[in-house]
Image (cartoon, helix red, strand yellow):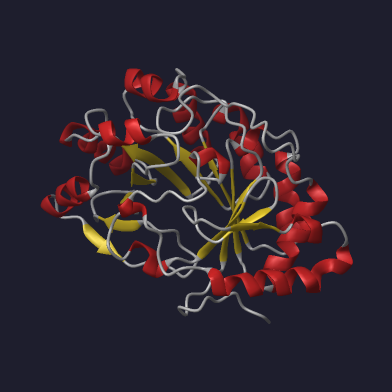
Length: 330
């Protein structure tokens, strides 16, 4: 089997596949004015057959995990068909999603029945008013109810992500609130450092704070660092025997963040991106039109690996092609 490797010896068993850039939330750090149609790119989103061919090729290249992202992936009417294709036709062992949790209480059973292997839910605060202020939606109760339903159905791989925002959700009080939650719930909670994108500089300057403040809190409260699996994401995870859940930190501004990079990205319109904040991306969509293009597509993807850089340069303010997080899958 051919394997995806770059010139720095990193392998890539993990693909983040955006299936739409449409989002129904208005998070301040991503789409503060809500979703706006990009009139400069009139290509439609990848359709089912293109997704099937794409996943088959990556499976042949050693990919065992695909994360469906957006925008908000569940807004697609064929969302559950996509999961079915990835699981049953493309041979992908792990299919997981990242979602804002919109109507999670209504979708929870369908998600479990679909064979989904994991879910990451964005919840920036357990305070209802703060949640509404950040996202533009008063939907925290339905999301928490959805998590409860997932747990009742014995769905285990539940993660919650929050963007760390100075003065909004980054105090010891906030950390303790999440601590109480994961003490009683087998859920992994991770803070993600606010990242600068092409159109959020003012917001970034106002609200960015280093994840070191959360790491210091964890060290002070006897949390133990846990090592990662080969297809794990970029989170640094911490465990405490008294808690059912785990804490985690995703710190893209940390010195060695890119050393363990194990994932590539496909945009909702069929562009291969080697890095969320890279300056290069090529369309592979023309090779997703027929089943007999598999070899050619494999060769194209393999050839692109030599262009993957050792690291992004976020710390220098270089945000690459990422205008906002919804355009490349966050």
